Image (cartoon, rainbow, N blue to C red; front, side, top):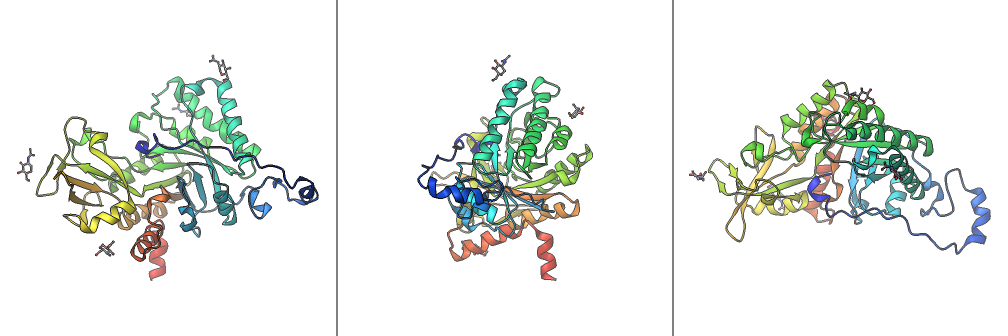
Length: 383
Ligand SMILES: *[C@@H]1O[C@H](CO)[C@@H](O)[C@H](O)[C@H]1NC(C)=O
Ligand SMILES: *[C@@H]1O[C@H](CO)[C@@H](O)[C@H](O)[C@H]1NC(C)=O
Ligand SMILES: *[C@@H]1O[C@H](CO)[C@@H](O)[C@H](O)[C@H]1NC(C)=O
Ligand SMILES: *[C@@H]1O[C@H](CO)[C@@H](O)[C@H](O)[C@H]1NC(C)=O
């Protein structure tokens, strides 16, 4: 997802096998279990192991990276949760109890999938894992460079098609989605067959973040998800023929902290010219930002061109930093496009970024961030 965070993320582990302690007792029960529910179902109510088959009109697509903060998410909105980190059976049961899908995360080397035999066995493994864990599909997060018309280009479209066919055949009502960068024009060296991939799966999750290319911006800090650039990305996906109903807008619940080499009076933060990349900026979660913004040297500032909040602070070594992020205001501006252009839904990377501690101010901020996903509903409610 947000590329820089991938390195440390842990691999999925299958559900540990449970000892069949109550086997004799369970036997009569097993016969009475509804379709799709098996004896090793980890949920209190066995029916919760059945796949979700309902197709919502509007998707709220959530990435979860672990821990237990999911208990505090706004489940009145969530339709799909991607179990991006370790498998958590409790989260699967909870999602199903709320009528939401819980899906696997899939990643595979694009070099390997040129081999059709390898592809088929990889897909079979994913279907098997999803069935074992009672999951409702897979989110393909393959953020790798692909050259136009290369063997990988064709293999990737084939992978998506074959994965969708297998999942739909093997798991009733299942969902197969694919993560794409903020625009279709070879963004991040990802020259994919976007129309082919959109046709081949249920929908695309558009990662409208990490949009700042420092080197192409003369090493000047800027917004993670600037308004015009973000919406132009969606216009471009629609222009090449992708149905808006195949697009889910992905917004960031994190920002970037840039170390400035020079900070001008008109707030231009110039980063180091060399290594004008990862070394000078790092990702920060919304909750960390909220703990810092009020005590920062500038307080919250608003950039009218990029429609984004930002602020400055000075670190202990005396270096200035500029932090660019998204909050309820910048998100609801982008989210208005979803309704206006009839996109399928909205989601975020990632849900764990908010403060779920229960502290009164944090609680209000967290609530506003969830609310900002559906700004038009909010307006209607206020009228
Ligand atoms: C293709 O993949 C299969 C299964 O992983 C493997 O056995 C086979 O050797 C591969 N073929 C090539 C040409 O690499
Ligand atoms: C994209 O994929 C579709 C489906 O496989 C195919 O029909 C189409 O020709 C491909 N487009 C390009 C430009 O490769
Ligand atoms: C750094 O910022 C100061 C204050 O705005 C400005 O006077 C100066 O020209 C800048 N230096 C460089 C190297 O950009
Ligand atoms: C920061 O300031 C804003 C605006 O004045 C206020 O609403 C918010 O509660 C403050 N946050 C904290 C953590 O004090």
